[in-house]
Image 1 (tube, helix red, strand yellow):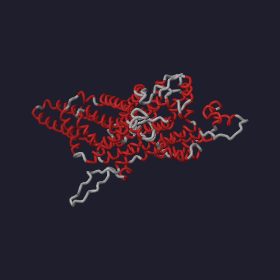
Image 2 (spheres, helix red, strand yellow):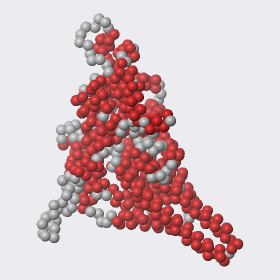
Image 3 (cartoon, rainbow, N blue to C red):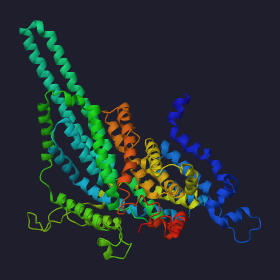
Image 4 (cartoon, rainbow, N blue to C red):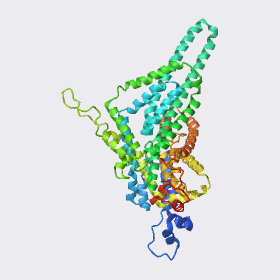
Length: 604
């Protein structure tokens, strides 16, 4: 009875109990809980003197709000983990909680919800929506599948590579929702082929048994075993295709800056704290090779686990291959010729890609950005420019006349109604909520407090700390949204890196990649949930394959920063004191002193 009640009202109980459970944080005084030394290190000399020096004269500094911020963060984390409210609705809590508790002013916190990377996301997603409206993504997917062949392992490779590539530019969920029906059509047709072949074999056996009664039992057993092999092969292909699509939707999202939410959260954290630009070029130089390698490893694992029968048994493979090719070619042919609108969208896609690649390929002062005022154009500027073009460029050839000789007025490539109905507004609020939460964590000193507590790791090698962070954040993302996980950890990771005298990018970037490699449960990512709903994959299948792949992804992320992140053109991750930690508001005392006394070489 109690269990049934709890399950029925789980969300309501969490909404009521979580704020009450953490209520003591609101009444905790920093001076009592932290002690004088830690208090002074966190809040500086004026606040320290005002709090502990009874002879202090002067205007008292603002009261610390570390534990009030911790209260808001704790409640949001619980809401996100248990999904007590929609994720995007929970992301709105800082809008009213921070101002009411005196953590961050309302005007400042509202600005967090429409930062540069949110605009970048809107621009990129607008192009993705136009691709979806005109079915260009389906044409690309089917074209690739017509070229890879129909052998089970090759077919799986084709689906996975296509999913990974499309997911770099489109929403992970939209990519999954587009690819799964194509895979299902192939699987359904293969099942029909097996059933029809089995029926033919049974008829042939009955005719043969009338002539050779003594061999009847042997023939039936042979047919039954052959049917079982075919069914097992098909089931293995079903599981491999579904898991491959789900996993590659997440893997592909890592490959490009706009591919998934955590990438943008990390980029904004780097910009807010250090004025360091994680742009399209330096992110792709790190993440695209990682994404390709992870796709390849996932393919090898899925082939080994699910397609061993397909590789060892050659039961009517030629017939099934022909049927598979026929299905894919029929679906591709049904799309017809490439339309004018599809060509225009492809040109817009190439234009945006070119603008991103050439804005500042070698850092500030290079590319087309040098034609404008320094620091003003960003990747978001290019994304919004191309997105605007989609609303004014025609979907049909201009200057065409109808049968009456009148000019035909063509509709644009995308309308505002289409864009607004398909736009992921929830993700936008989730991103904004993450930036708002991070603003409070930074301004209240909560992030610095956690970073100081992590100094116990100071004696460990830097790479080992990166690996620990990647695995920790990856395991947490198995049970909660990767965007909300990254939101919680972004500021904390930066503070921890500063306190351990490590380049923040050396920890932040691989952790951002690792958070998206969450494969073990249906709740880990939306693509996992979409695939699980189709019923081909069990929970055990997902855990058996997904958990090892998740840990492999976390490990590869920590290795990738060593291989690609040390280059000056990317993140200069080997340098514990890059230029942005020496100069300006982002400077740290350690790096200033090291630079001043020549203890550490600083790259420029």
